[in-house]
Image 1 (tube, rainbow, N blue to C red):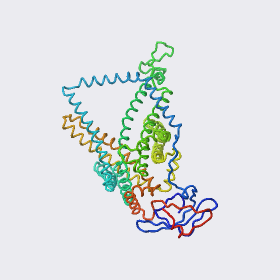
Image 2 (image 1 turned 60 degrees about the horizontal axis):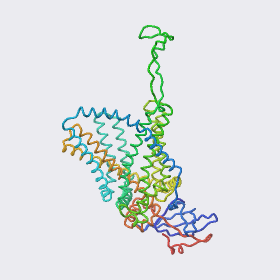
Image 3 (image 1 turned 90 degrees about the horizontal axis):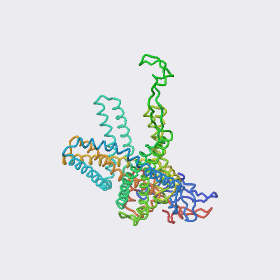
Image 4 (image 1 turned 45 degrees about the horizontal axis):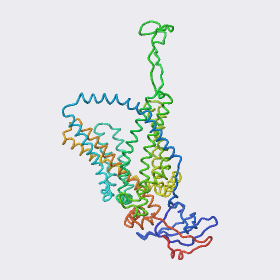
Length: 571
């Protein structure tokens, strides 16, 4: 076994430990697991010495907190210029935007007034009451779901796997009964795939559940992160409103439009079939079609920039929350006394870092995803217009997968940005090292939690939809409006629970990284949670240790026997 791997709690080196002329160390060792007393032997080589600390570390070393300083500054400046440009455009063209929307709003109000009944006011108040109830209930259920996840993590993850199989099995039966055999076969195939997947990962559920419980414990000790995440919603709404004013106002400008004359093929031909006469091309009295308006080339470029700005800013807001949560979890992990209250010092410091030193890195990673989203949207529109055929469809599918891969990579990179203050590129290198070392273990553990959180979001949405519908019946809302009320409740439940579940997922990803990099600190600061995670790991992977073996430095060219090593403080 070679570099880029971390080993277990107690490492007893056997034979010799040598520092070679190339400055890299090589040793054979035995790893002993404290939980079940098993031992495994291997050889480790090419780990570097660090004379300042006296510890040689394996090539995959844990992250180091970076010196305070602004990272990726140019991207932060570009993002601020983007905000100023959109705000200035909204001010300049705002009047045109409001004029364009006033007529539409006036017509709609007239229609409502004409169809109003004496009970219209009561209906409106009832509708508003149901909407407010939906949002309040969704928020309460989302917070309450944290306690449920902490107490029943294993059961919920198991249910999420059953749900994936069950929903496809039900769809198979429904399509089969309606004689839609091809669709039924597709769902039967997916039901089998999810069944095999559940069987393959079933032994990993306790470890994923232990990570989830640790993450939820950290969040419940810092509930301010939930409030911070909820605050992103009005910020998003405010940003979108400003963007819409700027966008609609700009669309009304003359430079966004170009005119062209529609060609009348009948009139320009020698023979007009409508009049049974030949057209005279020299007759100046012949009429032409009125000029038509379309988007100018400059207008298309401006629209693309607006769409890029919309996606970029939305990504920055989302990733700022993600990075801040990672910073809070890191503080709770290493310095629990500074992150054990609602609005703790860990939260304020992490948010401050995300909005200052790490903001450029957040803008950098968010811009990459935003550009991919704009290109994908362009391909989708072209596909809807039936331009480009099969090749454009293939390009759209490939770009969609690339975008998802970049988003997945970004969420891990921002964990390192939030934990240690790396620049975006440095964080990316750490992500690649993490996946080389942990591989599918990280991905599957993360996927099990993601699946469970998605089912939780759907469950909260269904509960809110049901309660909203019952409240609509109780307040006298007309039967024709019950379906819209239920849809509003479903959307509110999924949206609000999604905010909390994203916080949980950010915390889970942070704990996965921290457990891999700093097990000694985990054991020292949170022994009960560490034991649970370590036990679950051993049950799932009995031959693969979880935590790190730290080896002391030996003078250059010297060797040390196993007895001498075992008498030293080897963690």
